[in-house]
Image 1 (cartoon, rainbow, N blue to C red):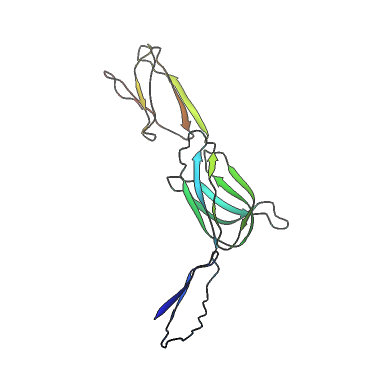
Image 2: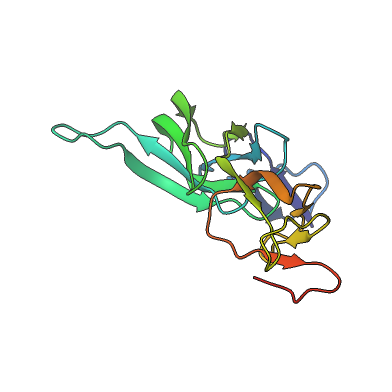
Length: 193
């Protein structure tokens, strides 16, 4: 007993068992297989520091139909925390763009035409501008005197930390857009948020 196995680009693998019972016997085997669909995969990263961006919506879009103005999304997914994504099961055809979007980042468009054939596997990475702001201020004691060395942290952003200068001022650059609570701490004083 033997198995005939067919592996063809653009198609799913197919196999069929065949039995040859006599010397010199020829056996005709017909295999039926399905056309494979396309895949686009890649990673969304910050243009500033190449760090991964999770939670980005990735949409493969077709041009708008007659009388329409907005592109039509064929398939979509969201990037994982490490910035990776995979769009599976893409039908054969021509697409106008891949759109990457998330609050706090600039929209990134990979313009087409993007041709998907049966079995196409395409890598498409996006280097995206991440909108950031800064936080600055002055810390003073109850007698309105500046406090130096106050440690400033943000529970929602564990990597964010700063301290006040001699004149009580602080500056925290590159803070992702959002609403945050800061904690101010210094020995001899009550923590303040």
